[in-house]
Length: 131
Image (cartoon, rainbow, N blue to C red; front, side, top):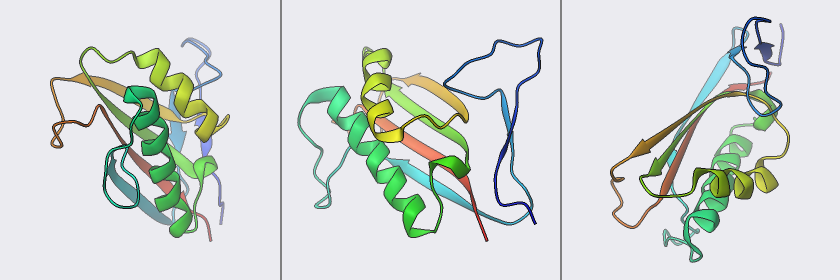
């Protein structure tokens, strides 16, 4: 059984070094990581604005993946929700230092607000758990 994801990047679509147009997950166990905010282990939002919150939210996603026996190389999709007015590019740069170079399907949405009022970003993921 295959234990890795396969990127699908048709030649007639934009090619990006940062995201894939599609990702195939082989049959097997899958983890759905619920939305992670930039909170520390005590549940407090980290200081430093959107960049710090984005980096911490990404660390939190990676922590959940690791606990399930998975990692960024097995992620099929990231959903990133950013509060309107936040600099998406600055958040992206901050998250890349944590995420590394792992292409996947990514959707970024600008929203009016998140369930936690002071949160500026929320990140969710879908990943394969390799056997």
